Amino acid sequence: MPLAAATSAPALVHKVLARWANFKRRTSPAFASYAQYLPIRYSRKLTVKKLEDFGFPGAEDLWDGVLIAFLLTALRLVLEYAVLRPFGRWCMQQKYYRLAAKSPIPLIDATLRVKKVPMLHEKQKLAKALNLPVADVDEYMRVWRNAEREARALHKFAEVAWKLIVHVFVTYWGIRYIFLTQAWARDLTLCWSSYPFADLPSEVFVYYVMEFGIYIHELIFLFFEARRSDFFALLLHHIATLSLISGSYLFNYIRIGALVMVLHDLADSFLELAKLFNYVTNVHTWAQGVTDFFFVAFALVFCVTRCLLFPLYILRNTLTVPQQYLYQQELSVGSLNVFLCVLYCLHLFWMSLIVKMAVKMVRTGAVTKDERSDDEGSYLEPSMMVSKSISQKED
Image 1 (cartoon, rainbow, N blue to C red):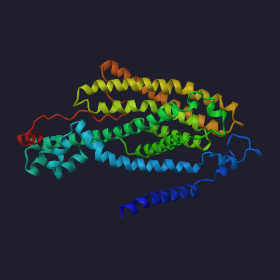
Image 2: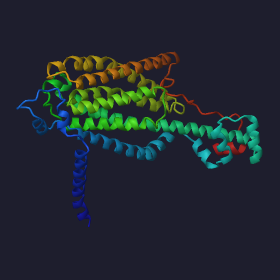
Image 3: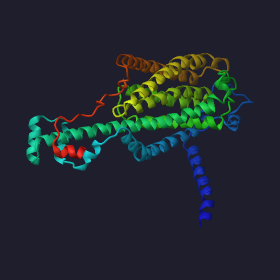
Image 4: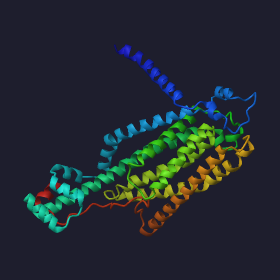
């Protein structure tokens, strides 16, 4: 029986892959329908059929990125509740969530959901209804508010930890299989000189659909994550990035597109590391120094890669070199350059926020908070007057 199951597993996988390939073909436009817009001169020697036989990227491949987005979403939900949240509670030494769940008082809970800091006469009214001292009611409210703060901090911690895992993985992949391996990463003229017959190595294809799936996943979760002041800038960034990835894939500008993504990936891991350690500075004093180190590293890498290398290494190339190799100036190159310029403007905007944080860091001697975050108060509310029954529970 186990042998039969083992032999049937490859057949099942093959069947699933065949159905997936059939689904992609049936739900995607035919290559000939958009090949006419490629910046090349068609002739008897160069036809749509020859491009298809060569393996020119097709629209159906983008469905692989959509599938990766759904798989990432499922993995994130499992990992967040099974690993990241317990790990976050341990790192931040959270305890109030247990106290709030140990002996809930529904009447006070309902009051706090409407008004987090009730007036004295409202507390007295609750104490009378519950036959409790006002001090106990006040302490219960403090514990409840701290538990809520812990929940918000834990949500952000899990969010950042997940992003760190994803960014470290794709950054390693981009450096290992593109930047250090592909010849066109060092000579950008090779990104255009062989057009349209630019081969697509499997490692580059995997990197492309991974990035496409990651940005779809992040665009979806952008509406569920902790809201930041630069929400609309992030939304515009994700839309521009998805347009660049899909557009560059369909027109086989994959080489220059891959380099854009590698360059953008380099700074993200440092930012997520700085955030992660910043969440534990209240319970681990040594974490402040680590936070400062990774923030400085992030600021330097961001400035070099996105504000200097990106315009000098990428934008200058895409604005001048394609004319030498492409048959005609199609809207494809021009529109993609527009999106690249949008990204650069967003980089300058975020760089201004980084400079503000750097100035605060110099003045205070430590990273205070992310300029993009809606600050909810990092510190827990201290106890003013604790009755014996409550303090024993907390101890």
